Amino acid sequence: MSSREEDVQAILIADALFVSLMPGGVWTDQEIGIMGIHRGDDSNTNGAFDADGILKNCCVIRQGALIPRSEGRSQKEKKTLTNQPFTIVYYQHRGRDTLAAGVQRGYELLEGERLPKSYPMIWEGNSGFLYDVGPVANATTVMQSWNIVMILSPVTP
Image (cartoon, rainbow, N blue to C red):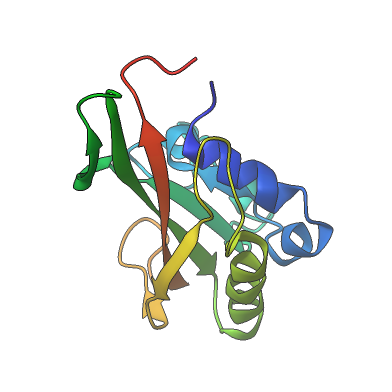
């Protein structure tokens, strides 16, 4: 069974326009690990940089913890309504134009999209344009927040 990060990644990389806007890759948090996008021998994300070490436009999908919703719980059926939040962090070395186009295309692809055993995805908003202070310092970023509502049971066939 794939993670929701992988489900979202599959939707995004299946779209040629989105991939052209994110030539540095569409990464999952599982792929990049705790160090995030960075250069170096220990990096899984060297593909996010060009030959001169400049960050190419890319994004990272980060899945949050499941949040049970008490109003959607059935003790009789042993099922619980849950929220699965996730974010997509978009990166661009400098500027905003291509980044904004990627954020918009991500929205167009995901809003209302239905993953297996879920209700349609819900866009919850974007941050403004921010500057990364981590390993890709001063890159322009936008964080896009999403929610997936699912009905789960302890044993899901």
